[in-house]
Amino acid sequence: MEYREVTERCVFTVTGEGADEETMEKLIETGDTEQIIHRAIQEQLCGRVRDTPQEIQERHGTVKEIETKLLELQQ
Image (cartoon, rainbow, N blue to C red):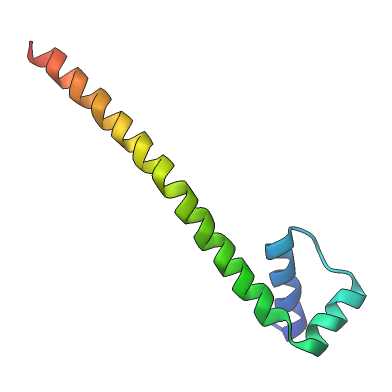
């Protein structure tokens, strides 16, 4: 895979859109592709951190429901 193709994929992954020819040339000439990859990694990590408390709350709620049902079965 060529460097240009990798760069195009990175841009699409980060922005959700393909870059035009002029933007691609600037990215390749300036080497800003590293910044794009770094930003993508940071955004993924931040998204996971934001989602974690909600997942914990959902699991806690599920555990509480299971506990209630087990107590009902025990009676």
